[in-house]
Length: 412
Image 1 (tube, rainbow, N blue to C red):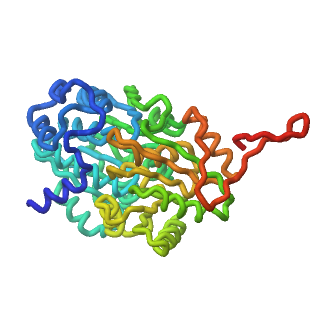
Image 2: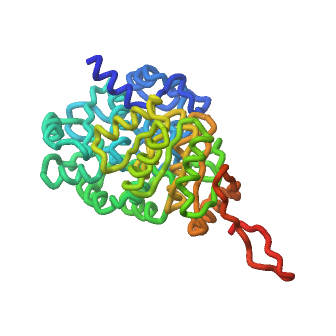
Image 3: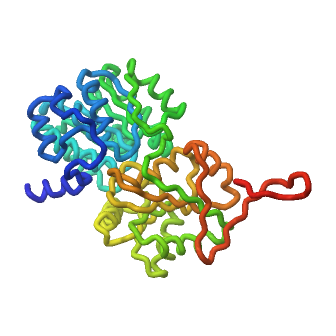
């Protein structure tokens, strides 16, 4: 029992003194039962974050919700607390949380177990990368809440290992990332399997047209809660741009890592590049580990744990690590490959400057990525400062010649 509690607490981000920005009111003003309040106090929460104070009272009334909030804002507790408040043990599968990645699902399950203790709620996690046999056995024991990634949940549905026909509480977490990963077909199958009459909460960090359409189709008169900052990017981040020729990207990265010695998360676009880059950095003497979707769940958990504990200063990852993984103290994000969307840039950046800390985001780009850089700058509302590192010649930006034959510096 002690080991189980330790496992749960290790999966939940550190919450001592709840250092994320909070509001002045207490949790006891949000209409929660005494038992749930005791569970909240037991994990060290004192005052709710803005997203928690806005979502919890509305969710407890049973209103459908679309919530826009950046990562690190406390949104997992924002839906876990009202879900555990509204459900009771022993009535079958009544709660469902859909998450885009295994790590987010495991973290969510840990929150549900902590807050659901007073109601005796049993939560089960269904994720890929592990054997189905134990999951099937656990499903037969009758969980109250299932937390799942879309692909594995659909697998169980098609094998008739579970029914969603009695689900009363549905949460779609990181909805924009779910669609970015191509999970819309699986998500539609899942939504066909749940009752039309239910309480639904959808959380997202952006609101593209695809999310609007999904909300219109599957939520009933939802309340919109938007606590994203005006710039749609986390505060406390210093953004830098390193313009180099494509052939000099690796050299620029190594120079950056030698220059900035803090905990660093490096993003690549492809899994094969993450492994290649990890090998390159190891040969250069850096304590590094890689993480992507081809890794087994045990390998991914080990990599993340080593990075969190400081055994590895550098984690090289694909975008699977850009959402929902709460690793305090990441000082530097490096985009070795510029993200393909502005939304993904925002989410990658959200891995740093957490808990009111400062952070840095460095993007290595060539002239071929000029359009994406311009889109990112438009979203940030400012030009990203151009920087350079010793030993790597920067790419020189110019504008077309003006009258008189002179050329002048330009963004591109």
